[in-house]
Image (cartoon, each protein chain N blue to C red):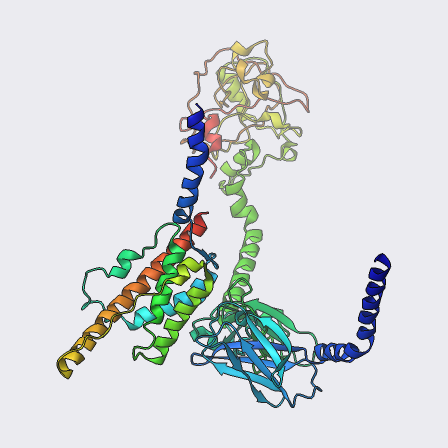
Amino acid sequence: MFHVSFRYIFGIPPLILVLLPVTSSDCDIEGQDGKEYESVLMISIDELLDSMKEIGSNCLNNESNFFKKHLCDDNKEGTFLYRAARKLKQFRKMNNSDDFDHHLSIVSQGTLKLLNCTSKVKGRKPSSLGEAQPTKNLEENKLLKEQRKQNGLCFLKRLLQKIKTCWNKILRGTKEH
Amino acid sequence: MTILGTAFGMVFYLLQVVSGESGYAQNGDLEDAELDDYSFSCYSQLEVNGSHHSLTCAFDDPDINNTNLEFEICGALLEINCLNFSKLQEVYYIKTKKFLLIGDSEICVKLGEKSVTCKKMNIVKIVKPEAPFNVSVIYREGANDFVVTFNTSHLQKKYVKNLMHDVAYHQEKDENNWMHVNLSSTKLTLLQRKLQDDAMYEIKVRSIPYSSDYFEGFWSEWSPSYHFRTPETKRAEKMDPVLLTISISSFFSVALLVILACVLWKRRIKPIVWPSLPDHKKTLEQLCKKPRKNLNVSFNPESFLDCQIHKVDGIQSRDETEGFLQEAFPPQPEESEKQRLGGGVQGPSWPPEHIVITPETFRGQSPLECLAGNGSTCDAPILPSPGSSESGKNGPRVYQGLLLSPGTTNNLLPPPFPLQSGNLTLNPIAQGQPILTSLGPSPEEAYVTMSSFYQNQ
């Protein structure tokens, strides 16, 4: 009997301490009542998706690694939004129109403004979109660039849709509570 | 040690107090003065020029010397940390797309590089909408109301879309008595009956963001005023001619109906609505409506004044009766209403020399009683019979009764019993006594029953 209580006293609490970060959220979300999202962020997301209506038919169906690694799981919505918002920033300087960049900035910076994440989440740098590989001639390089841009826009569209879905999930959860 | 510590403490305390009164006092005064003098207020206007927003700030004190003063906003900006205001006389403003519209910003008044005063503000909570425009008022004669419409640029905006509008109107001669109506749409209906007739009105509109919305702020500027005049009330004169015609004709119809009802009430309407019960006297009069010219028909008792009235006791022989009948006596004066036979004899008329005869079977019973209405005791109606006999009568005996014309046989019923040359006794009766009357049936006379009285002709 003595050894059983010893195990419970000295075994389980450390286990809880180890598992606690796994289950807890790394990011606190402000504006869960949805006012900031519905009045500002959603307007910009819809503007961006409207401008990318034509993109989608040429996109590949395979899921990007980013979405395989980062999901809008329960208690992980804040982390996902943080990573997605930081990814959005990378698309700002891709020869887009001013309005396009403007709305991208609103979505990324507005989302980051509403998140209060720990240094653990903040510390990891987002992966780059990919570098242009050296090619033999200019035409191939040009084609590759075009392809990359297309892939990038496909990814961006997918990313914006995921951000919208995750926000809706957060707000639904708030209304249920 | 204790004394030394106390001494040091007192010195430091005195230093603080003295420094507060002298050196820093000036700065303190200046700071107080700056806080009072450099207070300012700001408002924002979103999407005022395409996707550009504006932020306008001004000092509350208009007399302030703002020569070296600048405004700066930091925080809640896109891709930059701070922005400087532009100066236009007494007002500082910024026109930019770089407002994040999420989170607080800090607006500071700067004197050179030094911040004189700062205020934390949220751009979305100090929104001042643009003033409405194109206010117009249309009068609808059919509905007797005024439709007020106006336009606002916020209908096409993405952010500040939901506004509350304040419509204010008043009579031009009544300067300070403004009426206010709040609405969220851009159309308002004013009822004519709530406005003065033939008066000049002024109307204007302003807007404010909905307080329950994400965006909040202040009232916009008033729209340009619109002036309109209410029409005169000519309702009494401008009556619809069709309506007028219908009302006049219906009035006359009703009047005509009333007059006709009054005129025809007794003759036509009342007999249908309230039919009168048959009356023996009247029915008999109607039956005798068309008498022969040579007949004097009258039921007036006074006309029988000269007739002799005799009480009948029994039945005499026929011969005696015939003889009696040949002696035409003048009628006796008295008569009562009970001398009527209860039969429906129509239009009969008797010669004045008819005699009333009762059968012997009624001996012992006053024939007057029988004819007076004791119908249960009478087996048969009493009929006059010119051939019936009478016994023991001296004087002329003329009886009052139904006067049957010998020629009328249609409704005359046959006598219930053959008159026999039997026992008929006639007694003279005193004046005033009701008498029996019977009619000598002529061959063409019909048996009169009560039912024939109901045939009003």
